Image (cartoon, rainbow, N blue to C red; front, top):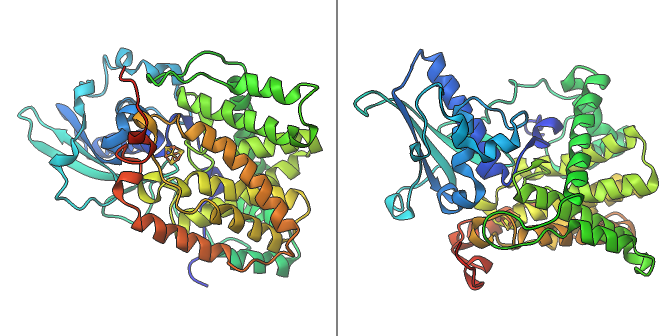
Length: 454
Ligand code: SF4
C-alpha cells in the first residue's frame, strides 16, 4: 500500500461562504496565509497586489473572487466570516493592515499570461510592495478545488493542522477501503469514523466536528427554503426551492417520486443560498454543495436516522470524496463539472447505498455507477455565476445518486469497472477536455445561450 490517506472529514466538509470553494473559499484562505507570511517576516508593505490567473481570472468576477481575496487580506476566515459583510467588503477596508482597495486585486486578461504554463488552472500571485512599488515579498498560490490551497512550489496543502499520524484503518484506494471494511467486518462509514476519531483525539471530538457540519447543512436548507425572489448577478434567475418543496408535499403529487422531489427542493435551497453568497458546506465543493445534504437530510428525516447513523453517512460520503480528491480532482477548472457534481453524486450514492443496507462492495459500486454516468460533464456556468446550469444540475445529481444506489443494491455488489478505475478515467477525461469547458466561461452553455448583459 502506498501512503495512507490522511485527509480529515472536517477538512473536506468546510463551512464557508458561496458561491465557489475554489474561487471564493480557497482564495480567501490563501490571501489570509499570504498576510500571515508577511507578518511572520516582519514586513509591513506599503501595498499589496494580487493577480488572478487562469479560471480565477476568467470567472472570478461572477464568483466574487476579488471580495474573497480582500477578506483574506483583512484576516477573515471563511468559516467564521460574516457573509453579509463579505458582500459589502468595500465598507470594511478602512484601517486595514495595509491600505487595501478593489484595484489591488487584478483579474489578469488571458492574453497577458497565455504563453505561461500555470502551476494550476486556478493560480493567484500575491505580492507585497514597498513605497516605490517594488516587490519585497511574493507567493504564488493554487486553489486546487474544494477550498484546498497549496503554494505553487509545494505538493502539500496548507492550513490543515500539520501531518496526521497513520490511521487505525489505513487505505489508499477504493479497493483497499472495501477490503479493510470487509476484513474488519465493519461498514465503510464506521471504519472511516474510527480513523476520524483517532485524528480528532476521541469519539466526542470527532462527533462534535461532524455535528457542526450537519447543522450547517441543515441550516442552509432551512434558509434556502425560506427565501424568495431573484438571485444576484444579472441572470434574472428566480429562487425556486420553496415552490418545489411545497409541490413535493402536495396531496396530488406522485407519491413514488415525492421523496426525490423533496430532496431536489433541498438541493435547490442549498445551491440558491450558495449562489447568493450564503454559508454552505463544501460537499465536496460549493458549486456541488447541494447533492450530499439534500440526499442525506431527506433520508435522515424520513428514516429517522440517529446521530451516529448521520455521522456514518457523512463519513461514507466523505471517504469517496477524499478518494477522488487524492487520485483525481475536485476542481471544475481542472477536470470540468464531472469533478464537482460527478463527485458529489458519487458521495451521495455511496452514503445512501450504505444506509439502505448495502455491503462495502455495494457501496463502492454505487459510487462508481454515479461517477461513470457523469463522465465528460463540462463546466460552463453562464456569466461565470454558479447558477445555470449549476443549481438544476445539483437537483439532477440527487436523482442520479438515488438511481445509482438502487442499481448497485440490486446488482450483487460488484461492477465491471471499479471506482478506482472510473476516477482515473475521470481525471484523464478532464486532462483531455479543452480549456473552454473548464470553468472559463468560453465554451458550452456559457456561450451557447444568449445572456443579457447587466
Ligand atoms: S458547472 Fe459544475 S463545476 Fe462548473 S461552476 Fe457549475 S457546479 Fe461548479
